Amino acid sequence: QVQLVESGGGLVQAGGSLKLSCSGSGSISSLSTMGWYRQAPGKQRELVATVTGHGPKNYTESVKGRFIISRTTNWKNIFLQMNSLKPEDTGVYYCHYRRLSYESWGQGTQVTVSS
Image (cartoon, rainbow, N blue to C red; front, top):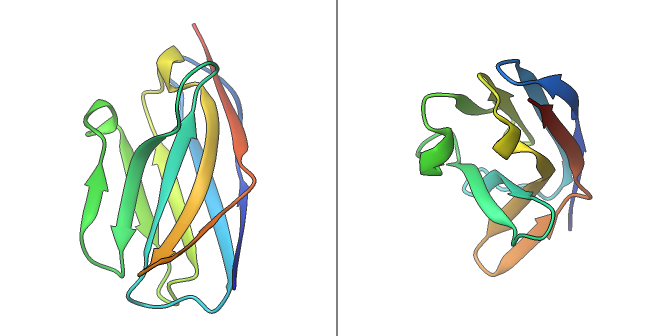
């Protein structure tokens, strides 16, 4: 079992920055993929960024060059540094863990970007 707890959301003006944190506990594998998804009001949940182990990172096109995902050396925690935020970045951000057929989600943290 893997448990995930997000923190760091809030209200920020367009152009500002926020850093999200996800604290993981339980049986976290070094080979797992952890990442961030977001869901805007009335829209489906979408991938924002993922990192596998300490290796490959993947970003959705709309955040490339603005967001940076990172992971601690013990593989349990990830972060999302969000810069140059836009109103369209508004949503609930969820931490996600996946290893083979197992996955876990955090409860989410709200990010609101005002124009």
